[in-house]
Image (cartoon, rainbow, N blue to C red; front, side, top):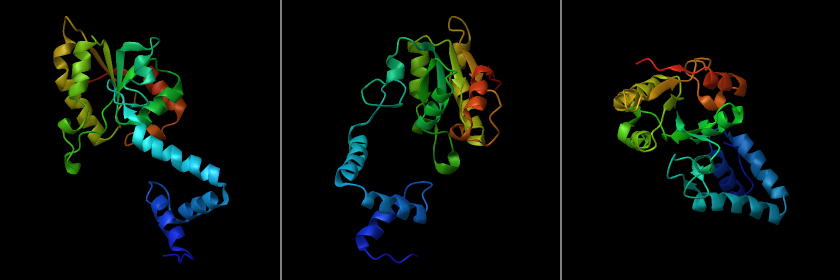
Length: 207
């Protein structure tokens, strides 16, 4: 382990190093960069993180991050509220929005079913999805979960849960993003062109 000339520096590096994807040397470089900045810059940085932690909310409708009870996407009159794209996390919403190819709304599960990790259907936002489908008379649900065993398991579970809505008078359509996204990939690491085409060329889900 590197030797630090200051306990304060070491503690700061340890905290930054605890973030995912940040190695110890990168953490040191970031902390030293902050030290070179003005007090106002550092206060603005730490203040933004503190306010984020204390004040950010989860949308009461789709569970995306929001500054208010309902996120801007769910509140927009320009979005197709009868088409719901089901994603694992907030990063996936950002990735799909960046493609500019989707005009519906979202439903953030907050995870995928993974018995190995102790995550069951009740631990993610599947019940609220089913409630939205009936309440909002949804016409299409797009499954945009990771192309992994856990993602496929979650897709199948959701399909079984909403099977009753596939028949009249609901006639719900269940689709899945095209397999332009490589098997085993997370959506946030897929390039925008490929992801956009996967949304546009989505296929009917086959259980």
